[in-house]
Image (cartoon, rainbow, N blue to C red; front, side, top):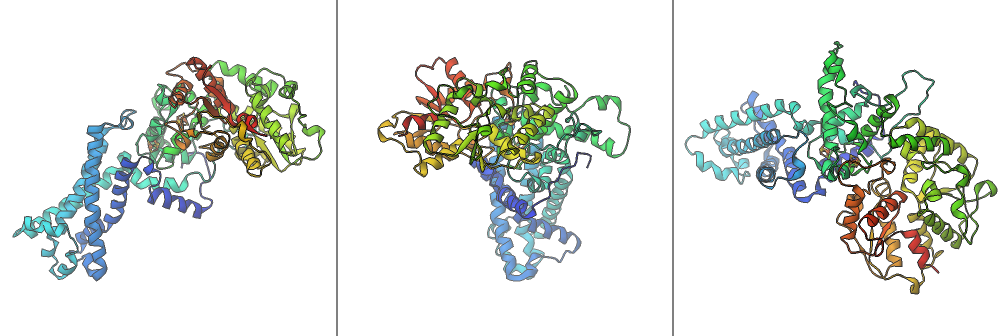
Length: 635
Ligand code: SF4
Ligand code: SF4
């Protein structure tokens, strides 16, 4: 309640559906099959075994009570108690084996402790064993229900072990069972296993629809304008709540490209730090007590918790969010904290000064003037129509800064324009009126600059009537398609993979059999196209059309794909710590022995091209956008 306001209650039915799918169905847990099955069995077992715990608690007050009172139906409870009890015991044994013998990397480090997990696993084991114990001897206490108790097909077999001393053992097991249950419940709030209480609500409250950055429009005339999150009271209540839902499973960190390449960033640690700082400061705030100077100084963004290097390492690739089994959203607080660094503290890597300056003065991250935005069209055999000179057009082709200025990516813009021309699409470009979409500025924490660019672009587009926007850059797609709405720009935005796919399917672009290439192609998924906008198949389908061979998948592909290292504004920053992410990804691509690495994003193209060059493979391995390949193979 001390966090910033945020509405996470709209569309309750959609939220419930998500709880059923991700919470009760454990769908994200199964992204790792073995560990997933183990966790799911413990979770489902817990749901089923609530019946046994409830029975034991009621018996504490009314010793005559038994589920057997419900007659035949009680047999269902008793059979399921035995089945799930056994499955939970086996799962706990596997969990301990995994933790202490297999030692998965993701369960180590970042302050995550084995002791807490082991204590909880032992308690779960204790609850199960004592439940079997109670069930084995309860006929002696409640002989009237003996017919129904026979449904305990495992526990009833154990009764021979306690023959002659059933009542004594019943008392021992019952007291042990209830004591462990109560100890377990009292221990929960101090343990990562508090997620047993918080994870389902957290899934319910998680974001519906695309993963946008949540920001209100900045009105600098207002007092107390939000300048970023330096400490917990500037986080939203949901960002704080995430801290209490974390299971410390480490799936986020295990998939984080920054962490994998030796940077100090661990998304798990970010979330755990939010929880630790909240536990340290929030009780004092809630009690309206004066916060001692030494606690006040230990801000969330500081050497005590989250450092600048951690925050700047994030590529906003969304792998952490995709993997998190309880739908924690790491990227929003990371960007909120970057905003604090940039807007409140003016503390950011030196190289960003030039980038912000260029965006402010030229409307692009590069130092090219706005007047050069149409240079890519020079030397084309076709005329690229410009919106200001064309009254009616259906499709606005948003070229993007890289499409306009990057020497390599200009060829992709030219390919797209030629394909549009072949398919007789009624389109136009904004040319000199287009400005950077604001994605990089926003992810780099310069929200004021981002909103200035966004508002200027929305004003420009208001002048024209068109049905949809076509983009080549997934970052333009994400920002214009999903984040401009908050600023009055509600557009249908399609990526050129979807658009060209449609044109090929409608035979408006035809592939020439003789021009098909015979080569090995691998496809690198762009995070902003894939994880952000769920587009995985269209580029692959297009590549299959032009290639006589198959697409060779990399070890990490589709929604598990590894980032190229350029998202979140990292494109404009130096990578001084650890291995370069683009090299890690390029090595993976080269391991497929493909001759062509196909990309669908200007940032990915730059990073993979640089990677191939650095590995000395530029001669034999080409990096191409699939639009170029389609154009080369078309009639
Ligand atoms: S968004 Fe990507 S880089 Fe950033 S913390 Fe998550 S996994 Fe790591
Ligand atoms: S944030 Fe999610 S994925 Fe990461 S450790 Fe916590 S629960 Fe696991």
